[in-house]
Amino acid sequence: MSTASLILAPAALPVAASGGVTADFSGETWWLTLLKAVFLLAFLILSVIMVLWVERRGLARMQTRPGPNVNGPFGLFQAIADATKLILKEDFWLGGAEKLLYLAAPILTAFTAFMVYAIIPFGPEVSIFGHHTPLQMADFPVAILYVLAVASFGVYGIILGGWSTHSTYPLLGAVRSAAQVISYELSMSLSILTVFLASATMSTSGIVAAQERMWWGIAMIPSFLIYVVSMVGEVNRLPFDLPEAEGELVAGHMVEYSSMKFAWYFLGEYINMFNVSAVCVTLFLGGWHSGFGWLWAGSNEGWWPMLWFIGKVWTVMFFMIWTRGTLVRIRYDHFMKLGWKFLIPVSLAWFVLVAVVQGYRSFSGGSTRGLLMVLAAVFLVAMLVLLFLPAGDDDAAGGTARAGRGADGDLVAPGEEFDAYAGGYPVPPMPGQSLPVTPRARRAAAMAAGALAPAGAAAGAARPQSAATSQEGTDD
Image 1 (spheres, rainbow, N blue to C red):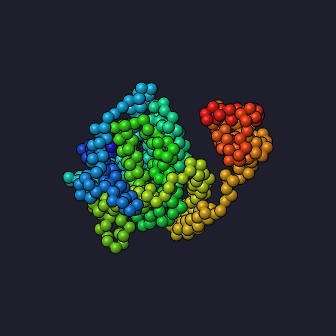
Image 2 (cartoon, rainbow, N blue to C red):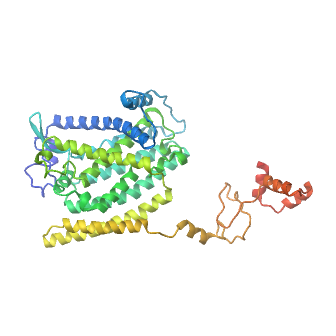
């Protein structure tokens, strides 16, 4: 018996004693673990190559354009051409960057991305070269907490990459990423907690086994919807790709990276998409269960479940591609408002409700699946009402409260000119303030009226103007 089988889930232990782990690793050997690791590495790299082609072709069809169609049949070799370009592209190093962190940041991002699939179950126990082993590399009683820890650790690659360059746009992208991950991991964690309560385990194999008769995505649809929104924000995909918004930050934390250092970030981003898709399938969509075992008894046996699992993962991936081609990027303040004022309170309320239901189940001893479905439907309606209920415009309310006041809170007379350069750099006027008229605009208005004053009179009239007008005159 190998060391891995001793520390993971011995078959002799009951499910309760092993922390809910149902996968049997008693027949695991070192070369089987190595074989699984190599398979996961190859699976993720090939999946990224394929999803690049699927995304580009899919977005092209959505936007009525051909997409990649030159390199190879149907443009299948375009991803290989892109990879070759990144490898052969000139690499550069910033003179003022922190060399060690500048190099380590993209590697850290990619390395942590590869770690999540180690605890994802692809299928039940099968026979490989005469050894019975589950289609899963490892599992332990707190496997999902391991996923959350790795995801939190991965954001350091983005933060360090933005900070180590000592450049403005990368730093802004890194700061945005930190705020985004903290905000949306809270709602994601709360949605996952309900799955822990319903499954009575944090083991991935145990959670999949608990969904043999009903998927948690159906019984607890509010948690499922909250997770789906949070996972899109977690991987920085449209409409939540604020850390690398090209219209604002050029490319965010990746501005100062090129060649393979950029490729590591690129690879990590797409592998993280597969990570959140696999976790979504494991927690809410039944894992490797087919969903039609009542129709075909052998659908959940042998190697067939692996096909169902991969198909579900690609379905979730296509959903994220679809949202990229359909939705536009939202404003950053609206994005934070969605996370803190809607997703987190709603997920917390749903978590409390599920805890009450599970407490009722513990004391009554009855089944709560039907009750959970009814409560989920009612809660879903309440979520939609809260989401689409017309609310007061915060910008309009804030503008009304601030109207007639300057940046320091002092009253500003209507029509009074605003000194945009008072703080040393130009700032936009507050509501109730107006920028001074530029000399060029004054001359144009005077010429149009046919009353252009003499130079001396014009100079005398310009004396009471603010310092901002004088500065604009020099610019003019």
